[in-house]
Length: 164
Image (cartoon, rainbow, N blue to C red; front, side):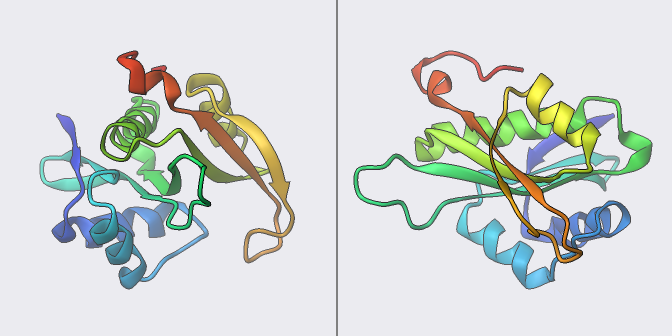
């Protein structure tokens, strides 16, 4: 049975392995560790019998101008192919957003998604309520553009559930 929990340092190899199997963007162990230690409440793993089968690595924006509210950012999310279509990505996203809102009082969350990644785009837009904020040209190393998507978390700070 798959369970979700807050990510820990000992999960980093499993998170990185999940990333390497699924995504063209790969990160160093130092990158994962930095965000995990900086914002420990907002990153989660999906685990099945001790194996990491999915994860979300998230952070809070460090430099928020005076007068603006805190905001979160999804750095990376991945679910192993054999565990897809079980709702794990959505559950990981919701857990992370609830932590951003509860622990850090985030007013909204952002993420980048490849323009060609229609499945992820539909998940973010249709199932999680994100909308396109802007397009970032040549965001990815291979030159592909990214949609910058954004979702308000205000409703979750007033006792209402994040749309799930």
